[in-house]
Image (cartoon, rainbow, N blue to C red):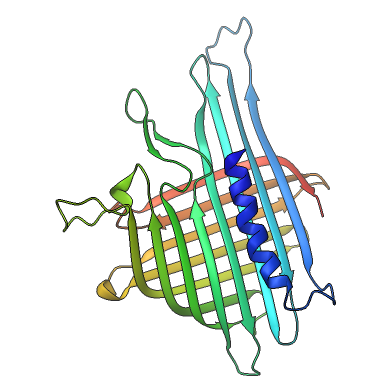
Length: 280
């Protein structure tokens, strides 16, 4: 509950401050989509082998935008959490992600518009390494937490693509898992906070492949000024096909490369059939 309250306060503080720009016109456009995917199998007197299993994933995607001729505000929160259980083993976490983004841009009538943004990336709960026995906790809520502020220019003249580029300031916050923020050059000191300056690029794609199929993609690139030959990459893709009003098939593909986390490229993909509901 404490974690949920913290997330809610962050979102409210950011959106309320943006509303002061023009509260009277009530031009804010909210949208909230949530989905639940369940995969279950059970056996009774089954002679061909197998184990009972249960897996579930819940996702929430909240947007609160205000388009206008001059100032435009885009606020979003995307959270996913999932667990699975096979046989008599304990539940294991399969999905554990929280992404908050706030963007304000001003249309000067130029080809590109100036913008400022703030993003937050972290986990919703504890994350574990299940390759060892017993499992080893390697992350938790805001441990690590990534906060990035960017100022630059955005280009949105194409109907399905919005891209922005700017000067980025990134803070990495840790508590227990300091390997994400510690500077290896200071051997006698362990840093729980790390500040980086560099270049950030974010490109969003929202393309309708068919009447009931949508492709969404977000590509984020970040590089520190002191090492412009090394880039952090986060490429999130999802193809969603709506079968009925409440049932959809989703395929997700996430590619992550952050040298501070791992020298190898991280890949996560998943196929899910689940229930989807547009809250508003």
